[in-house]
Image (cartoon, rainbow, N blue to C red; front, side, top):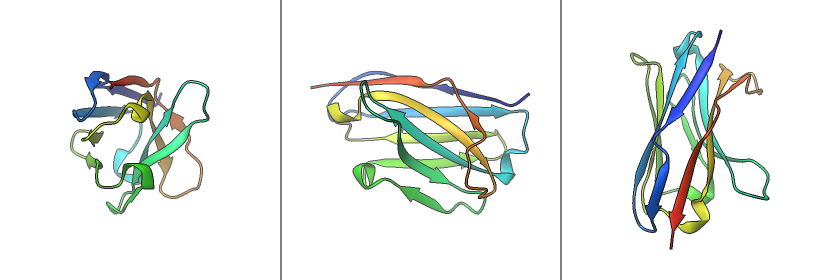
Length: 118
């Protein structure tokens, strides 16, 4: 079955950096658009960044210039490099997989907590 496993979350001070990883299995990784989403306490889940099979990237305005999404198809892994972290970036971060650009994310990871202290 398909599994997405996130790692790399943790506690960091404002201005610091973290790199999240999401390892995928059970799917043909190169044919999937991969996305990062986040959900803060009491808030709805929101889009962070996506990278499709053509390596086209979209970022939320709130993270432009600070976060970078990338993928390594040889490792079936998508990354989110997060720099200049702010307290408002505190959330559970989820990776998700969408077959090509079907418009629906079919698979989700369990999430990894990112906490940014001020």
